[in-house]
Picture 1 (cartoon, rainbow, N blue to C red):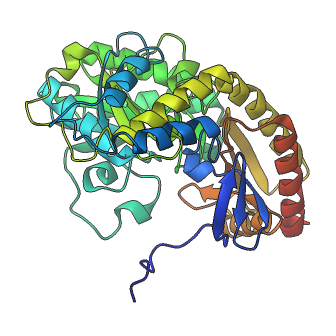
Picture 2: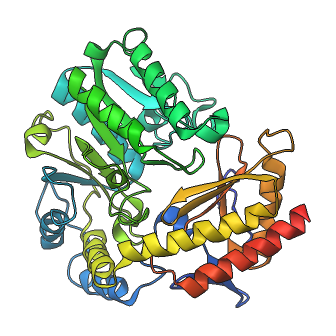
Length: 418
């Protein structure tokens, strides 16, 4: 008898039987408040009726039409529909299955379009587990350890993680931009750099929002040196941060290439990159494709997801309920100094646990995470040391459900910290 790989460990002990909205139900019938959303994937909640109906209808019509062999209507409609939500000028899209694939496709496009080979990524970023995406990832050693040599042509620059440095956001931003300028004249000469790639909020790296001044600084340097700016919006896109795209919290900045996945199709595997058509057409012939990319059922689910986000006002809801969640988490942290920082944008909120000396405290973060699960609140940890407990509710979450989650978290923290 075969079994799952023993390396696949669960973040919670739950064996799920079904899901509806913000709740999961286990095989014993117990209800769990799901503030993981499948790692930010089930943006419209579990089994939203409109998404279910769209997928069911499509399954009965066409399951798979390989998009370099034939063209199907859900793919064409989704491409057109994305034009309503993509930043101005990003008018060409290419579909894949996963975030990692989309990240690698963006790197391939950037190298083709510029004729340059170097990519500058930022400390703490997570871009995927495949070999090229892992080469850009420094959110934790587990992604890179034991698999080298990784893809070459990657340089890393500091990310303005103010809490880590013990500085103000301004100080951290100024430092990170100075160091980037130094890197561009030393280890990664600007004339050889194809792209900067950055998450608008560090995901696996600790749920740290990118300061607007830093993103503005990247855009300025990219324009000055002929470098492309790639926004990895795999986790921050589709309303998660209270804007449709996470980079939109920084006025005046539009990336050259945008990567999206996770919340795009409410749980169906689908990802995409978007770029101006003049840039996209510089990819070499045959460099874009894939057997399952742009699957018809996934595209139908994505169309329904977009309709739900718009008709139910979920971007505004993410902003409103995210502010409520952040405030609630900060109230809990105010009673417990071992939670050194609470931060986030929209429905991406992280709680960083530290020792009395200010060092990372993954042991207590892990215990608080487990205690929350015991109380019926499902969460995840992140950060290089695993000392950040993160909260990622679906965009449909209500004020009452936020308050329920805050109450359960307060109990869990009290169990661990007293």
